[in-house]
Each structure stands twice: as C-alpha cells, then as structure tokens.
Image (cartoon, rainbow, N blue to C red; front, side, top):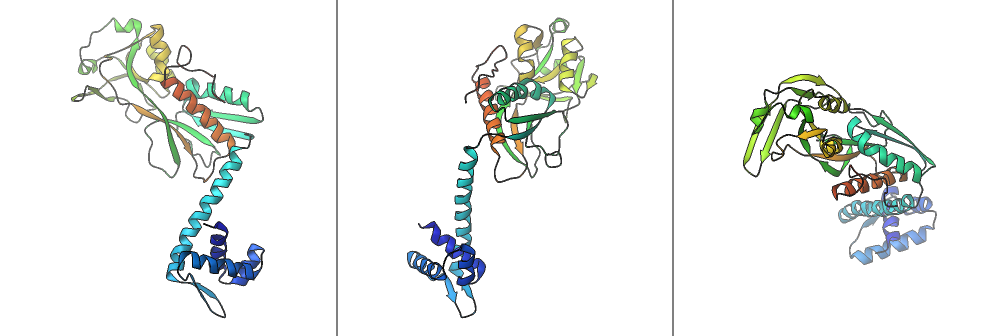
Length: 310
C-alpha cells in the first residue's frame, strides 16, 4: 500500500479539485492526477467522477475516503507517539490523588520521578474530594475504588483489598465468630466513602453476609480514620495499602480474616486527549512498576520501593 496515494486521494476529495489539492500538497497537478489514477487501478474501481467544474467521489469513493482518513490518522498518531517517546519529560506535571493512597504510594514514586527527571517539576494535590481535571489543569489523577462513568479516560493499574481492623488493645474486648457479631460494636465511619456503614462480607463461593455497622465516630478523611482506630476508638474498614505496616507491626488486628470484603481498583484518570506528554507517560510507567512490585511481594517493610526500573 502506498500511503502517499491515499493522502493524494483524500486531498482531492476534500478540496473538490485536482488543482486545489495539488496547491495544498505543494506538488504539481500532474503528479496528483497520476497517483490517484494508479490508486484506482490498484483497488480496481472508480473512486472519482471528474467534470469540468468539480471532482466528486463515487459511492465507493466516499466509503474509501472515510477509511483512508482513519488509516492516515493512525499513521500520523504512530509517528507522534514515537516522537513523544523519545522526548524527556519537561515542564510541570500536575497530579491529583486521595490522601491515603497519595501519601503511601504516590509520594514515593513522585520522589523517584523527580530524581530521575530533574527538568520536570511536580505539583501533587492530595484530597478525598473529586477534582475536575480540566478546570484544575490536572495532567493525571490517581483514583482508588470504583469509578463513576464520565467523559474522562481511565486505565486500571492495580487492585486493593479492604480489611475490617481494630487496634490491638481493642481486639481483646470482644469475640466474633461471624460478621453479624460485629454490628453492635463501636465503629469509626469513613465519611469519604459513598456507603460507610453497610458492608458485604463473603466466604468461599456461596456464603455472604451484609452487615450495617453503627457509627460511634464519623470522620471524613481516611488517614484520620486510621489514627482513630489505632487509638482504640473501635473497628473500621481500611484499604490494605494503608494498614499493611500496622498489621505487620501488630498495632492493628484484622477481624475475621477468613471473610472477605469487596476489593477495589486503582486507576490513572486523564482528561480526554489523543496523546499524553512524556511527563505523564513516564510517571505512569513508574507508578505501574511500583504497583507490580508491590503485588509481587517486593519492596521493603510495606512492600514498596523507590528502586524502580528505568
């Protein structure tokens, strides 16, 4: 396939004239006419109807024109991606993430990214509210949980588990054989969640229990929920990436570990765009590498490491 012939054909259809198409392309009318004629011989059908005033596509020509636009756009995209891949990150990378995941997972990657690409500044916004990426001029957001439908583009880069936990001292104050036994116990509700009190437990393939907890304390920031639980305020549900160190050190205890709570996803979310600048693609690559290392069980005490691949 000769892509130049496709480009010449598209230019003629768009311009409605061989002469105007040649002017746009910066070549002679004879070359355009010759190449389009060869294209018609290649495909074995008439693509254009030529009159003294204007050139019109045939029905086959209109269908072929639409396909050619797609092919030429993909070729252009491929060249643009190669050019971007070769470029070094520059400018300012603006990232948004939740307080809990941002502090525990994104900050170490930001530090490694800044060390590797000193020409690129990073602005990291942490908060449990959802930021509008376009009005906030955010290049990439890291969102944890369950995404709502939107016009944004998203990519799942990892998963997390949720654990019902309490402080080590609090664990000795009650016994529980199944999830329903937890309903009347002191509970720290995380108001950053859509449904902070109703929890669905499952064990094996066929056992499920829905439990509605009674909040004794309600807090709207996940790290503060962790602090309250660690201080002995009661039970709460927290993500594995936030409590892994606490559980390993014995400061927290997982309640009913044989029962599972719903797992969630970790996503990179972008404003709608055809291409990502190098600063975005390189950062996301490093974040994915950190997540993969964590899921494989690598890293330090909490499974994380800034020793990321180049």
